Amino acid sequence: MPPVLRKRIIPCLDVEKGRVVKGVRFLDLTDEGDPVDLAARYAAEGADEICFLDIAASHEGRGTLLDVVSATAREVDVPLTVGGGVTGVDDMRAVLRAGADKVTVNTAALARPSLIADCAAAFGRQCVVVAVDAKRAAPSWMAYSHGGRTPSGRDAIEWIGHAVALGAGEILLTSMDRDGTGDGYDLALLEAARNVADVPIIASGGAGTPQDMVRALAPGRADAVLAASIFHRSVHAISEVKRRLHEAGIPIRPVAA
Image (cartoon, rainbow, N blue to C red; front, side):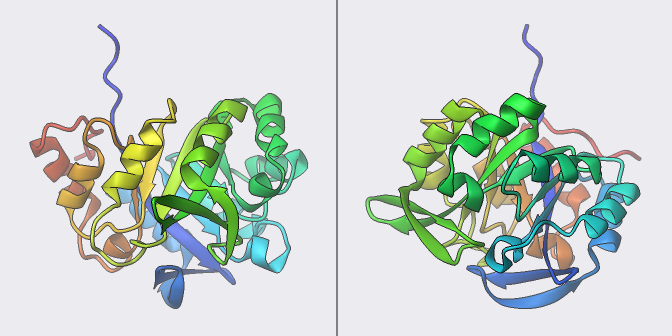
């Protein structure tokens, strides 16, 4: 029998000016705390991974905040995915050396898709996560760049398929329409992405309850769920989410006693 692939719970740290922030549909950001403190807390509470996104790096035309990444990496013993401002192989190398296990690319990859292949060739596709910020543009979705500020003109689903063909090892798929709303993940978006991607998909945008995560992790949808507000504000604990997923028959890594 093939091994059972366990689903992952991933708290997300959207970082701006060295602080974790959270908004609704990428707007009206509020301060949620220190990234190092929050990462350590989530790792201790049973997170499977931590995602650290420097959300202003591309917009401000700079690299990732490597000092904050390094400080965060020293405090966690779970995989750390980092993104923001990565424009080339050298940038990705620097982020990995700062302590990341995987690196996300978005804006630079939309501008120069060969970046995905270059990074996969240099470090292995398991390190390369393509982040896709998708906003509904009937009948499909459009991919946005620069932290959700700029429409790329690319159909998000077609872009996901292209990114996988180029060497993306995972897709971090955020519904801009659902981000921060607590209305649940965009299941239609996840299903459309699954139809073109044979690599893991991380669902992002809209988590409000553990049941939202159960739905997102159903067959034909996502392999992992990312959430921010419900964890930052202690609406739901990681242990509670994992208990509910286990009760729903979804394979997860248990929280250590």
